[in-house]
Length: 164
Image (cartoon, rainbow, N blue to C red; front, side, top):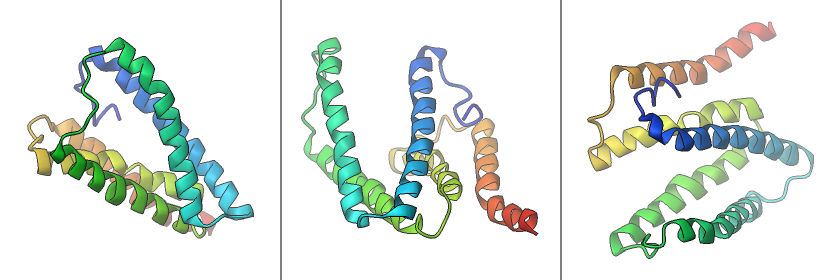
């Protein structure tokens, strides 16, 4: 992440730290999901709904404290925002999460976490394409992308090599 976000303003270090903690929690979460799926799995849609609803509930509990700090924050989405929220919720969150739960029946939690590590890559690339946010992509970003892609795509080969 230091390579991808290497030129961030250190005034944003709290956000960077929250992102790192979030990645750690996501790894733990995936491992716990794998244990649940291996033992006695509920249907993936039930599991998705329960876990995502829990996330909404926790975020809703935090929301009043954030509004208290920034009372002028606009929370009502505009018409354009609703469209993007729909796409992000269904196509970029619910569908991949559901497919991940299905795939976890056949792959390890480690492999799942490796593929989840591609999220910053496609997130930044989608922002570059759709919102013309490509101006800040420096060579460090591309080196970081290559490191992540090498880690993700070399894992199956290395696993096979070391199992022999």
